Length: 498
Image (cartoon, rainbow, N blue to C red; front, side, top):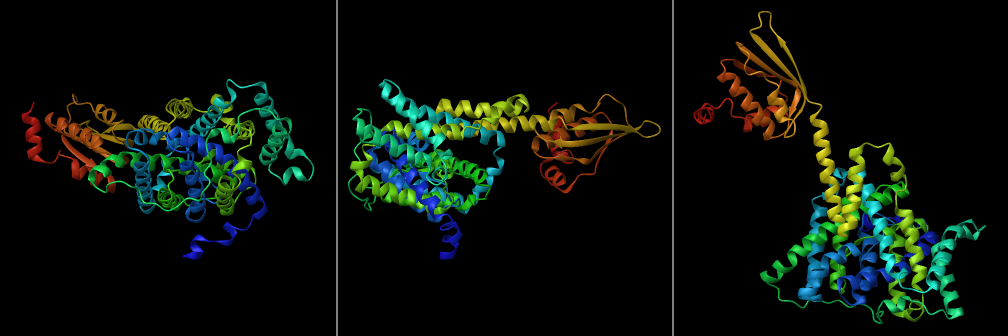
């Protein structure tokens, strides 16, 4: 068991890179965790404790080394009405139940359903997140003095130019250099701008174990159940999508089912330590990868550094200018956006572009990643169903004296091509026998079986003998189970009904 969760190469193969990237991520996590706590309507320490706890736990039990999980905006938006109506204790209980659902999802191996998410939806999801990350920085850039714009621009210059500095440029992560440099400039010049300390009071104690102080009854379960289901779905969607993106960035594979269960374990731990539910963060994961983080150590250290900084070094952390962290997040936004997708709009099929743009628009409009992904998958499914229905066609042939006609169908028969299948028959033609050859066809659903039933019954009513040949095993099973064309009683009902 220890070997399963503690493989040396997943922890200690990149110590320097993971340590520095973990520090950068921890610094970037602080204002985000506070901001997400404010969005949800809870004390900043709820988001900070959650971020520490989830990052540390997921580093051991998650399925994707190098990915960062913590309190997120997507999850915070789901919690708002629960906290408003029932308070923090019910949120902690909902967080625990969320974890249980996610562990069940991992046990049921629901991670495999990521294969049903088309590439266009993943690109749309990434682009929408990049836009949302940028939009989240706008409050820090509105109604502010010119100093903020100057510092943010200088911060971006350091981020993009520092890597070109000989020797040290590739060793020290440029976002870390940006944060330190801008903090020193603000302190030395005494510039009066917004800092991390202005975001909310930082906790000064370590988190303690506590059980939600609520009545354990059916009424409580009915209150938290819908929120827990939503949190579990949104959390798993964002985590699995982020995992897929980090897979591509690092050219490595991850265990999606282990990630589902790991998210659940991390959320249960967060709930017991007074934290809110969280999930993987694409922005922080990109910061981690770009800063050189690759293994579980980077995620673990991000959580540990976060706790040390907010509890023991809060005086230092509170003076970091928000402009420095805004510059880092703008870099994340630019790095996250798939710029090639804009160029590909000219070359990719219209249906693919529509799926991608719909995912972006719905996600940005609702600020809900689940809504965006569901919309994209639904639209992609409809386009696929429409496309595949066009591949069904039929060929006809007669015997020598034109008394027997053979309809030979090729392709997929399902709800979207069932009408086309039925309309292929000429019911007015006088024939002794009709042969329906399904050797190269496949029946998928009851709509297809219903179309076959209608055709066979109508042909027989017109006086022709009907024979069905060539069914494959799957088609024969569904036709035998749901078909009625060989059931005299059912046919009598239909005949009597006309």
